Amino acid sequence: MIKRIGHIGIIVRDIEKALTVYQGALGLHLAKIQERPDLAATIAFLPTGDSEIELVQPVTSDSDVAKFLEERGEGIHHICLEVDDIERALSDLRERGLQVIDEIPRVGPEGERFAFIHPKSAHGVLLELYELPTCQSELDDHSP
Amino acid sequence: MIKRIGHIGIIVRDIEKALTVYQGALGLHLAKIQERPDLAATIAFLPTGDSEIELVQPVTSDSDVAKFLEERGEGIHHICLEVDDIERALSDLRERGLQVIDEIPRVGPEGERFAFIHPKSAHGVLLELYELPTCQSELDDHSP
Image (tube, rainbow over all chains, first blue to last red; front, side):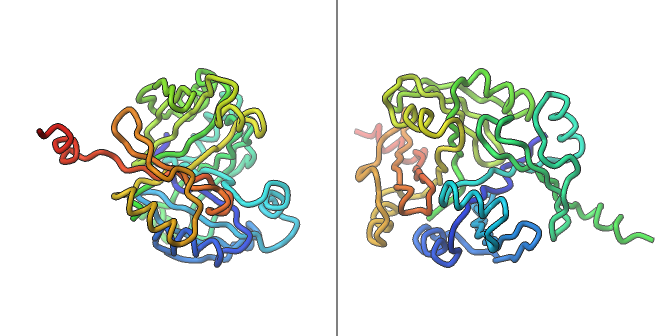
């Protein structure tokens, strides 16, 4: 069911300052910085092995990520695990009694489908599951 | 400098209960459970892609991990990044003004050498760096 750790999301106050540590001092490669209005955040992506570190800067004051920053300060926000089939994964987890935050997967800017599991169901960890689009599904999307 | 995310450490109250989620529901493979008296913890290792999820259960009431559990509850405790050369990494980070918790790397049961970086220096994230023993260094250790 789980293929790998897709990324670790770290909430930061200021991406440029955080990059002086994660890119400058630790030497991680900055692949891109993306505006994500759907998450009220700007995100810096730093590939690390077969995973990624994401620095997430809230851009409004009333979003979930802004509230996390306000209440808990900077730090690790969530772990994202890549799955093959997100519908099946969510259905399996619901059957086992885990509290799924997103009943229907949300869709990200690159076609990834993602959903969050409540920390109450995962021993204090906010878990994201995502399924990445495959070449085949992209072809299917463009077929007549 | 950084090769990959070595593991994510999650503090849990009871490894057996946490395994019903991480092994049972999410389907991760349990590679081993290890007693770590040096960390006052029992640790379950669940390989995930080229990384690992570690479930860390405190076994005394006065350790750092026990205090974390007492004050903050279950949840993500640290991220460990694998480096090639831990002495050079620590020296580089100190030069850049980061606060290193372990001036000299500690040695784990499998010869791994590890050190922690203070969350104040890494935007709220407790970072561990570790260097794994290589075949060559094991040979060197046993040479006359």
